[in-house]
Image (cartoon, rainbow, N blue to C red; front, side, top):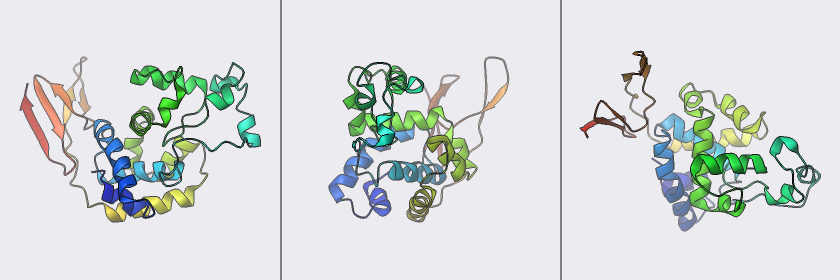
Amino acid sequence: MITADLIRALVPTLSATQAAQVAAALADPATRAGITTRARVAAFLAQLAHESAGFRYLEEIWGPTPAQRRYEGRADLGNTQPGDGYRFRGRGWIQLTGRHNYRTYGALLGLPLEAQPDLAAQPGTAARIACAYWAQRKLNALADAGDFEGITRRINGGLNGLPDREAYHRRALAALPESAPVPRVFLRDMAGENVLWDGKPTVYNDTRLTLYPDGALQLERE
């Protein structure tokens, strides 16, 4: 669902080449993270567009400002060594900040982000981090419920920049076709309980389940 045309609809000032690069980086990780419906894609792209100033920046602009100086020595960010504030400054389309977060997402994605923090500013890695961040905070569920403010709070910790985020959200919704209803499929877990499938590709009882952006459900024997 994430295409160059959609990215340009959100940010018309991007060139066709820039929009294609953003879309190419995001499309597959977003699909694997279940960001496959109109509501989910619109909310996801709106938040990323705001966080990256219209997909223009993959790295925090460093002053340093007074706020940036306070990164240094912040135990809550894991910045325990001299220079960590700058070394682990914000990178990516959802700004990854602090040694602790670089270590956490590096382990999650199997990438040496703590040793090589500049990797987080590469489009492909930035896309994987953003999708992992989205999945970790269970933001698809909030998108399904139409709770855009709730998504903003989980990303920002508050509602900073909400009007700009909402403007991107409106543009994304206007550019995306209406989604078909997501099928409600229940799978039996190890305890014998029925659990609502989250729509991510999975194998269940030797059958691969794939949900396409148009709402079509494919069942394929392994």
